[in-house]
Image 1 (cartoon, rainbow, N blue to C red):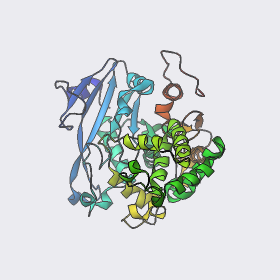
Image 2: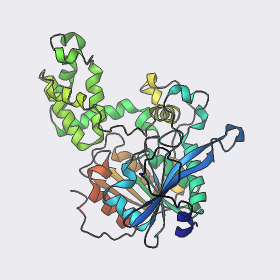
Image 3: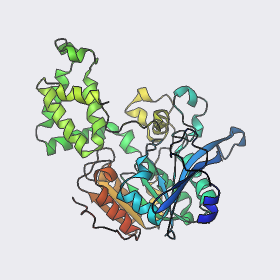
Length: 404
């Protein structure tokens, strides 16, 4: 294993902001209870084809001031959607970095790892952007920066796909798994229409009458009925605008409540709430400039059959083998923590329960009762308590009860 002193000696430079203009320039970022180094590791585009060349894989690695309890690899979601918050804020990330050596990286094609911003940049290189390639990138970092030591893998949403694939391919390198709001198979996208209908039904159960109001709102938003509303004409509103807002806001419980309020407003031919949401950019998940929608669509088209529900987004033919590791999970014998958001419409708890049932007794499951898909942000204290206890880290202050 690369020791703390040896690792930091590689990056003895003057500390500068974490998101510098040259992200591959090594940086040493001192913290209160840990130090972080950032940089890039050069890795092959295709390990089976040397002629494909190499690219810089951006990473951040935090070393605690006290002896590390182990190594943790954090895998971001999307795919290809790195987020700043994973390493910087909240009781969970502070607790992890104060006790574990934490490695985080931008997946290929996103963030500072050779980000692909347009379809043109992807043309002819589609085969280089797969979940399998990302797993091998994680393996390269584990070998080079952590000396091949066993790791705990922590993945939320699409990060969980990578964690499961890594653990199945490299079981001796995997010490534990922490999986949040994720799945072991493709149906949440390949059967996306059904997942969406289930979500609307769930809103109707929680807010009786919602479906009737939703249908009325769609009728109100037919283009022919908007000619008398000047404020809406400039927005070129169509029926699918409400649908877009509905699912953009579904990632959080607060966003779901806002969806119901907007729907009721529009159903009564009032548009203030809708216009206010449109003016703020519509989305719950605001862009950080790190994401790659091109790579997200590409991987979900090829490995999750996104074309079945949205053919316009998919110009790549579907592959025969879709992401599905359910049958292999019974062979995973590592301690695993699985977290779900009770009201997650993206990857509802049934997907996490499927993983738990396949893996058996090594799994501990918890459902956060006031969360949707963004459970780490919606219930930061509760999720921190569960994760840190699983890792044997004592909290320095009383944590909120998971159900609160």
